[in-house]
Length: 141
Image 1: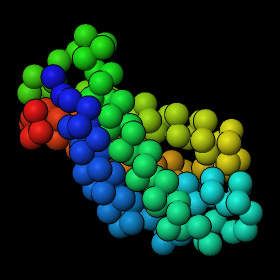
Image 2: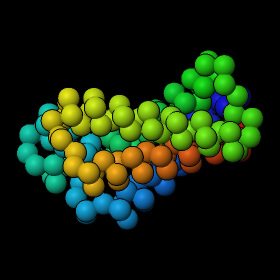
Image 3: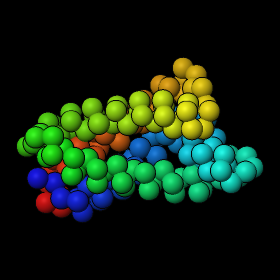
């Protein structure tokens, strides 16, 4: 069973990998979380690139802890790295849907185009696979 600490650590690792992929695939603009910050603070999202990245890191850390605690509560076992990565992939896709429907569309008011949806889906799948594999490997078990 993955511990809360392992989930927090896995969230850090997975978010860093996800962010690296996002930076390679992205258009060089700020992350969507910068738009969230600017919505409440005022100004342009470009002004909030770093706070947006920090907020995204915080989300990723918390999501890692939720995964580590939630998976056993659902009666699932992360018995091997492969199984854990597969469960993580599903989790990443769930996070993608929640992110696109709730955060981007309903809260921020962004209508994602095809390219943004593809990148958003890819990076969240990467996050989930890395998180699951990290916890499945039992590095901090």
